Image 1: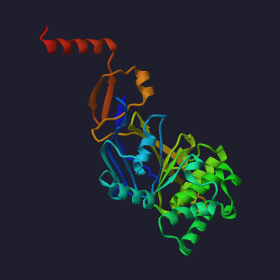
Image 2: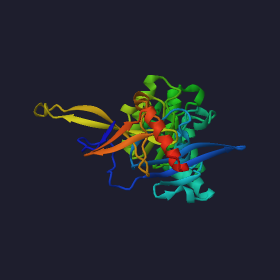
Image 3: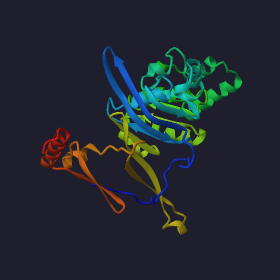
Length: 331
């Protein structure tokens, strides 16, 4: 197995320059949950950077830590250790009152469960207006903004309908409008397409991109939906509480028919293994199984490549025995 560095030949579709300070910075995040005398580690030194105006997704198996990360970014939970900065705000140093203000003004939420997004006895318009009323800034300007949001999500003719009169896709689009009600720079979406059909899911993902492009909102989506890869700028996979791989969507322009006025767009996706702050990486599990890599490998530097060589089981056993003998002075 070889790791080789090479120059990038295409630009990513993210809107922020890599040289800019990240809008979201997660540095060595650790989260430990304690139940009675048992401890469960949800995050194990996770590192992540997200640029302002980026549309990205976080994927991972159940128990990987992706929902824990979303709760931390939303100010709903605090990490056990590490550092998390959102828009220049250190979430670990915030008081409870500051966190309430953060959740009200900086971050918006879109949940999979309808009951967490909207009140069933209010109309769509009243549900979008409610966060602004709670924030204490409601008037003619806010009413216009609520109507604009419902128009943006394609529900101009459903503003006065209640939850029971809407489809699952319409309810989720109302939820997106509610999440944007207080004009937050960050929108977090937890499985936003988990309860809708394939066609509606595609519409919702397209809507997220439209909102990012129109308002400059940074959007982070946690999802199991594999189709998200073609809808966002970047996909980060979390495994065992750490960032494992990163897939970046690239757009290529074919200029061969430029003289005829035709520009053809094509998409490619580059997948990378992510190094954490200590220089560690997670080798994909299928590689480990195919090469029968266990607990030890040999690492060699050859030119501009790092070679990872599996150690045969008998060599590994012999190395372990020799180390044991050296420890106890045996020959």
